[in-house]
Structures are given as structure tokens and as C-alpha cells.
Image (cartoon, rainbow, N blue to C red; front, side, top):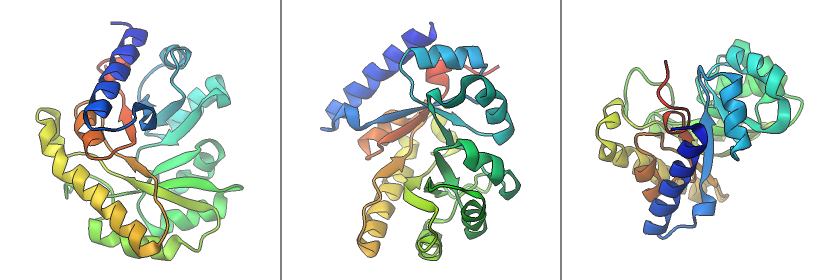
Amino acid sequence: MTIQENIERLRARVDEVAVRADRNPDEITIVAVAKTISTARIEEAIACGIRIIGENRVQEMRQKYTIIGDKIDWHMVGHLQTNKVKDAVRVFQMIQSLDSLRLAQEIEKRATKQIDCLIEVNTSKEASKFGLAPNEVFDLYDNIRKLKKVDVLGLMTIGPGWAIDDPEASRPCFRMLRDLRDELSQECDRPFPVLSMGMTSDFEVAIEEGSNMIRIGTAIFGPRR
């Protein structure tokens, strides 16, 4: 299938699950994750209406940005090292993988404008994954809420590795993130509107559990080589 056909099929699936969950499909934002994907194929996705590109590595983003530029928004969806922050804040409109006070302080130091961020939470408790333990989120936010250039808009998580073959396995993780966001919002008396959860294998479950931002690679670009 072509990228256009993949995107049309993806949007149809998003619409279907949103309606089934009694939600507005227009509330669901698609982030096209372009790890290892060529600029030509990214340009094709943009021509089909994709407006946000997610990248896992700063170096890879820099190479693509020189060609694609600001015609779309860029989101950092992979682990961000502090020594890459200077380049990251020049391009990314959102950093979805904020996972430490040190990283937040480096963003504050390097950014020349306010940067939208999501706190990454390791809801599956897998040692191989980055992100905070759920019980660490409140303390982190309390420590960074005074920073002027770090604007936390919500939370992000990745479903468990075994969910690739069993999407339902992600449901407890997604439900945990939604509940955590609600608790954080209540405690801080402010909204955290973004819940970024769900990838190609489990985005339908994520939408059912409240996700309004899904990070899709394979379902748009096909299997990575």
C-alpha cells in the first residue's frame, strides 16, 4: 500500500474507534514517527495531510530539518540526552520524553522560547524503558513548575513490549496514565490536556482509554528496514 492509502486507512480506524468510544475523532492528533524514514517519504506523508513528525534522535532530525524545515511541527518522542538539548530546543515544538529535573533545567537553560513538554512515565515498569515511575511524577512536576520555559501539557507512555502481539496488554498502562493525569490535574488545580499514548500496535486501545495523541510509524510508513 502507498503512504496515502496507509494514512487514509489509519484515519478511518481512528474515526471508527473514536466514535465507538463516544469521542470526537477530531480530538485525536496523529504524530507520524519517522525514525529511519527518508525525507522523500516524509514529504509524501506531509502532502497527505500529516502535520506533526516525531523523531527519536536529534542527529537524525537535524539532517531532515535542513530539507523539510518548518512546514510541519517536530516532536521529540525518543529519549533526550542533556547534551543534545541545545539543538533540540531550536527545532522541536514539543518534547514528549521529559523524564528528569536535570533535563528540565537544561531545557530552561538552553531554550529561547517556551517549550511544550510531556512527562514520560514508565507505566509498564520495564527496566529497558525510560520514563519515571508513576509515583515520581508529582515530585518532578512540583520541582519544574516554577521554570518559565518548560510548559508541561500532559503525560506520555509506551505500552509494554509484549503488547505488539496483544494490544489489550496495554490497557492497564494506558488507564494508569489517564488516572495519573487526572490526579495530577486535581492536585495542581490546572488542566493537563495531552495524553500521548498508543502506537501502531495498540492505538485503538489507547483511544478507548483517553489518548488524544497517538504516535504512529509502521501504520503510515510500513515496516522499518
